[in-house]
Image (cartoon, rainbow, N blue to C red):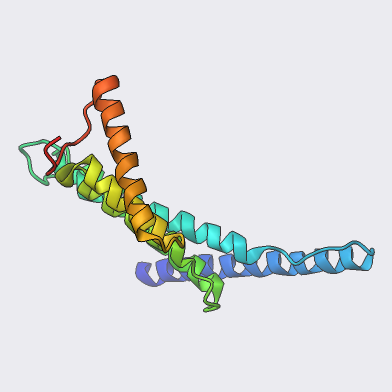
Length: 194
């Protein structure tokens, strides 16, 4: 009995959300018609751009949640995954974060309605950033930054690989030596003997 009441409640909330979205669309359409009737030059609402922004935001939330979730195991403690241990609550929070972020991204995709407006560039840049976060310690700052620079330039449309490699390596070396020698801030050395 409680399960069916809970499902009806959830279904009611989802229906209410869909009704709210439909009311917003109708209001925007009415506003557009009113402005056009007044002789003003009005463009259609930028739902595509805002939806792409929402999608990028959702993907950032998912990525950060996954990174946080993978870092939970680094929390020190002898209790393991016990409820009284230091890892349990962060595990729950990060898992809920990832779950809710995925639900948000799915809702944004539904709003796109299969229009193909998925921003591939944002997703690839996000993947590059997450990969960089995972390899900067084992590979070192210079190597991982240079590779990340080249990948980012390629994703953003550059087709001059030699120029990108040279720029990435020079930039990474300058920043590395500026931090380590001038500021005495140690960056990860990694596999290169610097």
